Image (cartoon, rainbow, N blue to C red; front, side, top):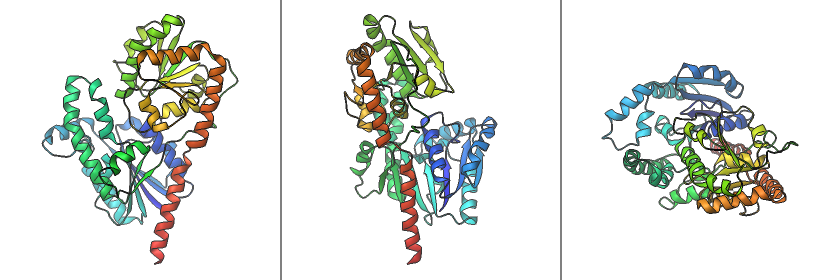
Length: 397
């Protein structure tokens, strides 16, 4: 199948959730389909990453996005009903490029990563159009409001209904939509039952992320996540300020390693707390996972499925997280994952695991088996094969 593949960010390096999903989809689909990748790039510094994507693509087309021009466009169009992030990604150059490609190449389908790219193929009904919403962003915004500053609460209270209207619009307009979790699917089907929504979960490469025969550091905790994303920054703050002190009352030598690309000035001061290390990006994630006793992901709000948790489980780590995170995962509580929401309860779960090595080992084995059974990148290949069969049958009629 000849596939047009649109992304708002270059899907490399796969160092954050959106890039990770798009990159693995490219890699999975490349063997069976001819892919033309069209992506925004933030600056020239991203162009050297293109060779890493070329083995998976028939062609790669880039459009440079000026942050200054995009921000100006947002402020100039605040009165319009579209989501601000949709306005931010408006580009005449991108529209002209996509229109030219569609007019000159025999594409069968278009994959659009995130709704902000949807306008570029919305007027091309001759294609089988797939919008990968990934998460219902309007839902995550609603969950995040209590934890945001007054300024950002004001902005997002304006943005949330705009996004919600557009999410409903795009699932009605496109031939099909993809989400990661059943919880998010239920939000949209409640208002539009006939929406053609498919659950395409994220996956984990369990050959790359796996337990190693090395000694784990006793009483060590690990948090992993892109440190420029608000729900991760909030989780680190919550962990360092409210949970870790309770753990250290009972386990005084407990340490926390915070790993992830793009640590902001909001995150770096947490490294001044006793026992806390802000490592930032690490090249060998599996190595770091295998040095740790317990993985912690106390996200107070999020949507979909958190890949950071799947990766830790794949490496055989016991995971302590929140009910919000496990709502997407659906792992067995107390066996495959440990769940709590209150700081004291989270601390209690962590202390129990740090003190009980056999429990940690059992939970780690169960966690890895859970991921191997339920979370594979191969789901996307299966769905594209089904679409290809449908389109082929339609052409034969």
